[in-house]
Length: 363
Image (tube, rainbow, N blue to C red):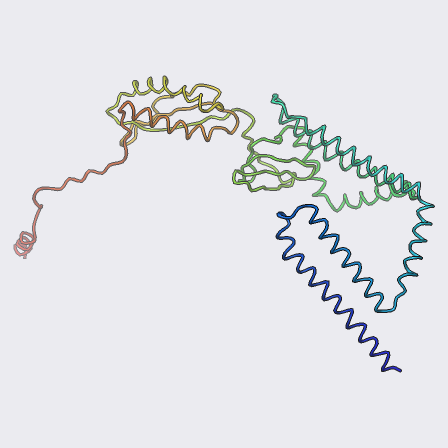
């Protein structure tokens, strides 16, 4: 009798193991092939495939229960009966929870759409408005989520007043052990309300320079010119350099030969350089030739500046260099470069025989 029980258990375990192995193989195939072709497949095809996988998994678990002689029909009938009875009792709480859930999502969506429109127009306080909008959206999401959860719990018979008191005690305990987190929150509020920087500003923190793409209650995200994003805790943001507080200045330095007329060169550039504004609208004032800044070993160095929009001076500097080169070439004004002149004497200063003679005489 025991041998039959052991054999039956062994057969059941064997078939169960086969089903589990089959499920693992199906998961492996789905990971290797379906995920790779996910972008090329139509959405309907993906839905059908995942639905088929779901049916296979449910069928496999049902088959395992059947192998072990589990009464599935009785289980389903009891489960369905209990579910129907519970839903009949809790139908009001269920409908209320669904309504609260969708109202919360709707309110968050409306708030997001409304706040995303703030700061779209070009106004003097555009960046400031975008920053306040992002902070407000973060606060709204947290408040709506907490209120929705408390309302849903109250619908299901949970007394939320002790829960609120418990949350207050938990918050106090967490606050004592999470001083860094609270410091980040407070620093975030000071950053926003003291106007240290806004979303869209170009800043430099801890040697990293980039554009502020997001300011949250706890962290700030900065995107560098290479596309890399640095996430900093607000409490760690100090010693900030904000490049967006005022206009930027493009600075270009170049040299001309000593024999060239400096004043003529300056007058020529003052006439020609303003034309660059047609190509670079970010220039807000005509370029200015400041004059001679140094007398180098082989050139007279001059400096040209141009005021631009915030952090828009890099392209302007490249354009000014190219235009200055073209203007000087067209007017035959030499741009010198380092040269080395080597003079070789016609006759050697001495030869080997003279050296030997001289040495012999000394001896």
